[in-house]
Image (cartoon, rainbow, N blue to C red; front, side, top):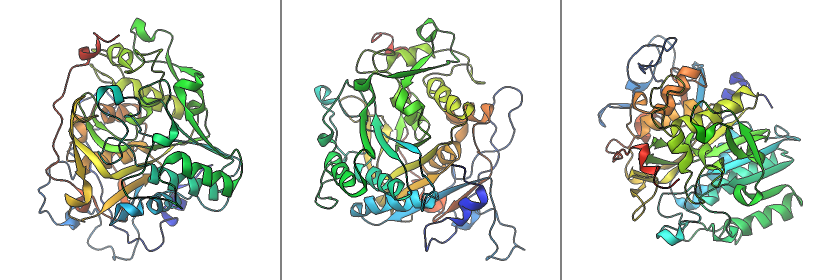
Amino acid sequence: MSISRRDLLKRGVAGMAAALATPALLNLGCDSGVKDGGDLPGADVPADVPADVLVDVPAEVPADVPVVHAATVFAVLGSSLTELHGMGMQAAEALGFTGTALANKTVFIKPNFVALGMEPFGVGFNPNTGEVTKPELVLGVAEQCLKAGAAKVIIGEGSQTESWEWDTVTFVDGNSIEGATNLKADVDRLLSVYGAGRVELICLNATNEWQVIPSASTSDLVKDGISIGKAFALADHIISMPVIKTHQWARMSASMKNFFGAASINLHGNGISRCGLHVAYDKMACHGIDDAGVSGSFIDMVKWRKDNGYKDFAIVDGSICLEGSGPHMAPVNDGRTIHMKNRNTAGRYFALAGNDLVAIDTTVAAIINIPAADIKALQMARFLELGEMDDIGMVGSTVADLRVADWMQPVMQNEDYFKGFC
């Protein structure tokens, strides 16, 4: 399926008011061929800056004349966590997933369910902590994909263990969908409504089927490439569905970092951590960065999909998130739970949707007040021209309204932390 920018701009959520926030050029300090410029609006703008400061519309242009940008990010807002399922459906609809848009296509929805398998370490799956994507949001997206004719919707993850029971992927306290309170129960509902075989739950490690892709690292640890789940690698479309988090090694976890969980936890790790991919990219020059770190590995995955002609999407969970030194809470790391509606000017939870992962992640960086130039993954994405960072329109809200100006930043760690695990 190919959706043009013109079509994308036409297919908004009904009733959304357009509000545009346009990043400027960034100076990323990479190798030749990288654009020069200033910092992204929203990275260090005081909280009291009026929203219209971020709107790049010439004064002489009438307010009712639409401004076309190179990439568009849709914001779907909600006042309550009970709205998550509907927000997921609206976000997918905003991407144009209506009618027969996904006819005969296989869609792989990749949430961030990283806490699965961490129970022995005191951090199990809990949607109330901010560590994980909310299942209700995922199910809303899955249902809208089915409505748009998808032949199969796969909800898949690698997480941090060999396997798990899908009914342990529970909803936010008090939430339900048609009586279901966990992912497995509502998938059963979807199968009964839309037809047998059209939805599948996959633990990539249990399936143990891998697609080997090239690695930009010269480390012996990845001399044969990176093994990622075959169902993930070969799907017609991936919808990356991360929850917004800061991260002690990648600095920010968003739609591109979410690809990391598709790599084999055994072939590249110790059955719990993908430590081998951290170590393999430590002090390694990749994609215009002298010390790529773990970001080099998941950028290799994003690049491979794009190089092979796949079109991917992102829908980001901006409800209960994780600030500080994630990607986990104590006792594993020191991430802190944050309800976004309590800390942004809009006073709303939100989901961000787009067909450009780089544009989505650039927008997330602005919302959590991290200069894009400080995020290695975005520097590499610019170097490789994987997506748009300079001309991004936002529909449904503004960066200023969604920004958490006092977001707690992570204490960064070195990749050699993982050497003792592999």
